[in-house]
Image (cartoon, rainbow, N blue to C red; front, side, top):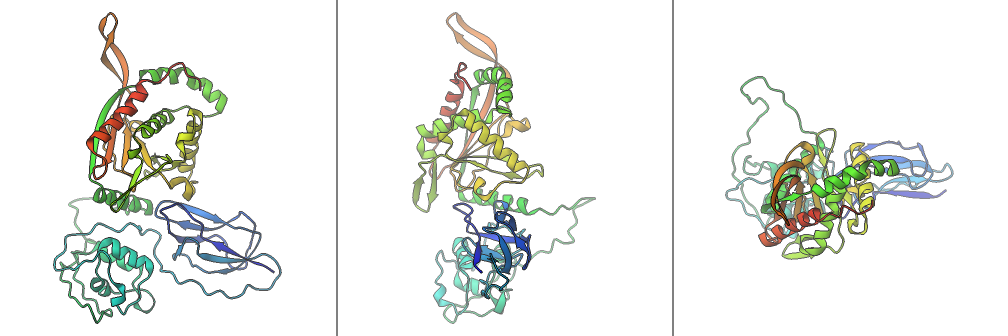
Length: 439
C-alpha cells in the first residue's frame, strides 16, 4: 500500500493560505484521480482541490474552518490495500471563519500607543504564529500591545481572528487584557470604550443586510487601496467611430465562425497593451522603496457577478495574443466568472486592470487601483455626439461615436505627465484603428 499526500496547491503569487470551507469526502471514502476532494476559500476566490490519485481518504489533517498554508499536507490518500495509513500529526492551524477577510481593517487614530514596524518578538514570553507576526508588523503593532491581546487559541494563543478583531477596534475599545506580558515590555493602553450597534435606531423601518464573504473582502481591498495609493485620475475623450463601424461590419461573421460574440473589450485591451509597451513604467509594482517593473503584461478585467459583487480575472501574457485570442480569453474568463468556475490562477498575477463602466450606461468613472498594481483604466459608454472635423474643404460638423477613458494611477510612482500621456496614447491607438483589418 502506498500513501499519497494531498497538498494545498499554489494559488497565485500573492496567496499564501486558504481556509478549508468544506470536505467533500470523509475519512474512509473512495476517491478517483481528479475528483474534487475539498472546497477552499482564499481572500480572492473560492475553488476546489482535486485528488492527485485513485484511493481512499485515510486521514484528514486540516478540519473545516481551519487555515492551511500553501504546500501544507491537508490529507492522506491510501492508493492500495486495506492497511490504514500511519498516523500523521496534523499541523496546528488557527481557525478562522470563512467570512473573515484576510485584509486587515483600517486603524483609527490612537493615543498613548507605542508602535513598531518590526517588533522584537524575542522580548516576549508568548508564542505567536508567523501569520500573526506578519499582521502585527504590517499594522505597526508593538510587542507590548500584542501581549495585551487576549488569545482564544489553544493555551491562550493569539489567533488571526483575535488580532484582526483587535485591529478593527483599536482606538475604540478599552483593553483590559490579563494575557501574559513580557517582562521587558509592559504597557497600559487606554482607549475609548467600544460602541454596541446591535440595537442601533436607524430612524425608521429598515432592512439590515449582512455583507457576504466576498463583499467583506472587496470592502477590505478597496480600503487598503485608498490607504496605500494616493489616487489621481486623468480623462481623455476618444473618437471610436472607426471601431464601431468595423465591429458592426464584422461581428455577425465572427460570431458565425467562432461561435461567440465580438465585444469591444478585447479591442480596448489591445490598445492598452500597445500603450504599455510604449510606457513600461505603468506596468510596475511598488515594494517598499523599490520599483519592480514587470516584463510581462497580464491584463485584469473587472467583471460584475450576478450577485452584484466584483471579481477581476486576468488575461496572462496579453501581449502575445492577437485580437481573436484576446476575444476568446475575454469571453472565456467572463463565462467562468459568472458561473463561479474561476480557478485561483485565473485571478492572480495581473499587472494592469481595465474596468468597463460603460456597460452600466456610465460615461466615465474614477476607478480604484487593484493593488499591488499602480494604475487602472475605466472605459465609458460609447455615445453619438456632434463633432467638428477638419477636412480638405474646411471644417464640418459630423455625428461621431465618442467615449471617455478614465485613468487612475498611484501618484507615489506615476506622475501626471506619465499618467496623462499613457491614457492619451491609448486613445490614439483607438482612434487610429485600421478599418480594413481582418479578424
